[in-house]
Length: 175
Image (cartoon, rainbow, N blue to C red; front, side, top):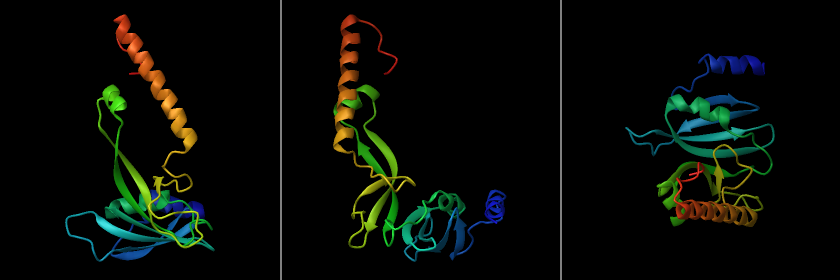
């Protein structure tokens, strides 16, 4: 049955139509409805209730109707940790540090993330936490070990850059 459902999705026979409905994802069902605060001319604002056999969570997302099916297929399965949590999918701008800006010539990096809008008491998710697109198991915020490793990499790149400039050579291929 699951293979037949995925085949229907690939052939376009399982599309989101109308204001609300139910779609199936890999291992879960999704009840979707267009939010009433949607403004004509903007992408639709959808509220997705993702239900498994025992658990449920919600996602609010701005997307075109044609993108909704792909989005549903990429959602993670409900589990006990996500029970009752409401996520919002959003685009965030990350300001790069000055030394990285100097190296790459960019100031901002755009990232698509899921942000926790609400979480029940006792949940491992905290309001305001951000997670990578469709990977709700590891927060985007770097751990202390990640920060130390990134700092070491950055220092090594800067040392190599300074060495190449002092020797009058062209920049390393890393740059």
